[in-house]
Length: 116
Length: 111
Picture 1 (cartoon, rainbow over the protein chains, first blue to last red):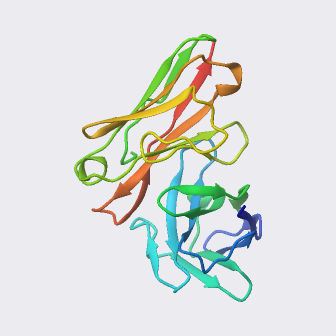
Picture 2: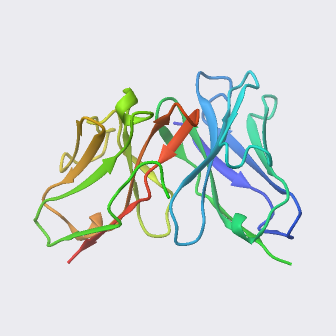
């Protein structure tokens, strides 16, 4: 049973870079799945950010592509998200999740607030 | 503006049946990509509810069912219970965006 857990700073300054890591437990990140990030601004819906395969292949949401980098560390069985030039609009709960065709399971989510 | 369109809210009394629609376009549902549904309880992470239009993961009650019609999908919940009060999201793949897309979410209120 794969479990995911996000970690990283809960507060990021405007124009800074948001960095989060997702640890994968109970399964290998080298399995035939995509490892994804989804975010949810307070009171709003879900937005797919992007995803990575263990080979390093990535796909990003076109609306965020210029600011997003997702990477994988197979030795630590984890993957990471970096979002640059953040503004208050990037304040959200960030979830990591595994995608075969559908997203399952999901991490518990971590709230990242962009504020000075 | 979400790529997949859902009603913002639906409601029903305990025991009743409600449906939630998810309307797409020719670049997602209409292109033949699967639709999946998620339930998000208040303050919790989303949870897979229905995959590939009609399939329930282990542990999901058969009160929840999904269907497809053309460029739309629907989630039906029968025998409404108070614990079903949550936000529900549909999700698919969009070939013009080359990525996953979600509906805007539907808030279910059990009266």
